[in-house]
Image 1: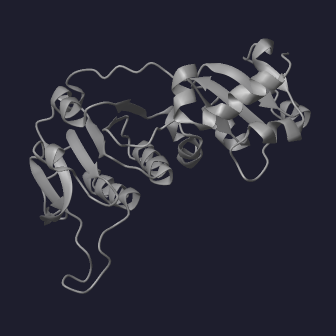
Image 2: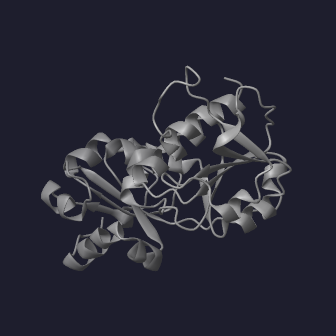
Length: 254
């Protein structure tokens, strides 16, 4: 069992910031549920936990090397945590190397995010994608880092089963080989009447500006989530995560 040093404590706290996560190629998950949901899926670099938590979750940690486990006081964990409410455990994982294969949208439904900026929105979108069987998400410039502690917390463990690929969104859509690229717009055709496929790419736009002009050029099918009743005054638009949930439910025939 390893020992917590001041230097290591500062290093783990620094993972709150993207530049340090990228430099260290590591991210952290906090809280018992979040850690237990992600523990089997990522390479564990460190597991910081109280004596009581380790005793209660001995079976879940049985595969871990003793060198990665660091028994800490709750006050020591709090110093490394990004949570307001104290937690008994923090896991630090290697950021996995993901490779986006060409043509992935020819056999699967793929989600594309055009500048989603809110960590809570992204975390919820990942969780919704997991629920509806979306395994790959393309993230364009401006989309928040999926390994942010706030995003990880909001995914409720779904980050373990959904792969997020970052890069030029237009280029990734082209590489996906999608025959159909769906986008959500306020002037699109009602999603209730559209002929939807079980392959292709679905683009969700930025919370304030929607789908960018550049990415819009790739869209083949413009979809609208209609308000109800039609023609009545309503909010300007839907939250991006809610729009994603409704859209994916429609694609899955719900």
